[in-house]
Length: 364
Image 1: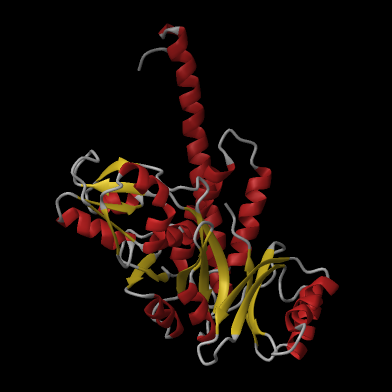
Image 2: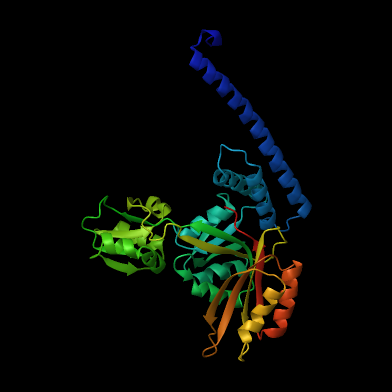
């Protein structure tokens, strides 16, 4: 090995930093394994009880963001910690997560965003099967889309939430980047564009400007659209990068969504409600009595107890004509005093009320 004194000045400076990095890597490896050992000890103390605690992970991620001095940005730090917590969880058990398939959908991305890569993501053909798999214990949790910032609520998910025995354990907010993908590398000769109806709607202006004569064909999922584009000539699909990689397609145009902050929100469903994390959401569904001022009377308890309602969505009741269920999201946990008091009053007013879950807010 050459004497450091004989190295050019810049090479000597590089060696000093590399030696420091090697020492830090050794310390990091020791500390990461030490942390994993503590996680294993906690798992043994819990004696195979609930492995995933979303409220605890949310608290850790919020603390890490608050303590982050840089130069790594918060998003990068959160991503790295999610992966390590995922690996630690897998030491106890590799979770099985149901999602709306096939592979390559934004739902699959939502699974990875919430649970990290050390899980088994299991695709199902429709939302009914996704939820049923978690109800029956075939999968540990189910990830379902609930709303999009551009196209609004996913009606079928709302309808299924009324009857399911599962509770909301967490929410995932996924920035949706839509891409036009195809076998070719140009827009020339593209005659058909496949995609999920919501994705077609989210890219309507771009399609009208760049492919006005192409036939727009809705399909069950963006991944299915990518599969068709891989099989048919003069065809494109709107999908994410994962689908392009999986089906070996070129990204002809990226970021083609009409709204730059297009985001889809997902719920994670399971069998146990998380305890308060300090930054929580509560969701419920209720009906209103058929009398004047009914909705005012239902919303009054929230205002009375200072509860902040962030969303209200109506869905028609399947068994009744011109009757509706109202889905409400509010800030806080059902064990918090204000929400607990508001829920007690709502139960006395609403003909039907179901608490869908209290869960930590999404951490990004």
